[in-house]
Image (cartoon, rainbow, N blue to C red; front, side, top):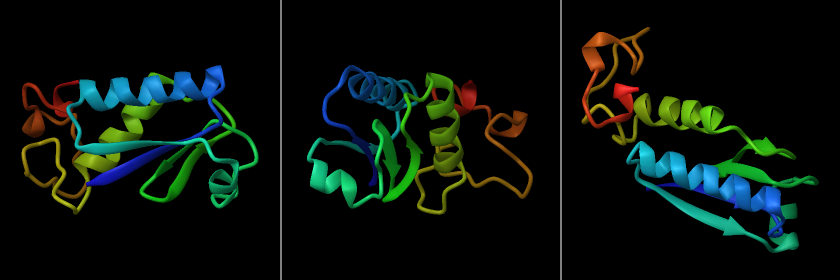
Length: 115
């Protein structure tokens, strides 16, 4: 299972970031574990000096700002649909080179490809 970590001390922006991520994961029916990291020492291990920050599978992808719902949706759709881990939103189908989830051949009702 893939992991998304929200780094932040509990400020309103951190809570808003967490809410956005939870919304997108639920909307797209993705299999992600969401963790909230509030301990300053743990946050510092990611070289983050400004929160909120978002970590996807131990890689910091956003720091120092609240991401938009669209940005998170785009990032999670891209990494899920094109991942080699089998977490495909297209029901296990793999994309051909140059194809993406919005192509007609991968329009599956009830998946992130139906956006």
